[in-house]
Image (cartoon, rainbow, N blue to C red; front, side, top):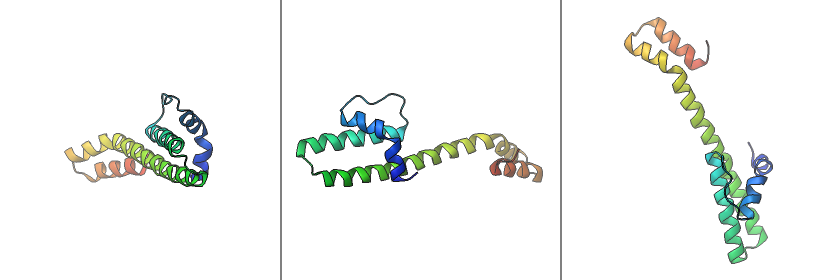
Length: 113
């Protein structure tokens, strides 16, 4: 995902934060952080009468961090799934260190049936 792609996907979150509405329920962690960052940016911008150029720069930085947050969240999810799907093969190998069990573990790690 790019920053430009994030801009298109996050307009509803940004609009709710701009209007100082309640955080929508059901958001994943990266979207929750994004909402809170936007709400803070817009609240602060109103208080100090932030110049639009500064607001645009800060919004861009917030979206860049959102892209990183989404990547990290997806990486964490895929890692957790990998540990879950290989658990049986890892246990079998620990109990009986054979080539066959090592091959089964490797097949699970590689995503083969």
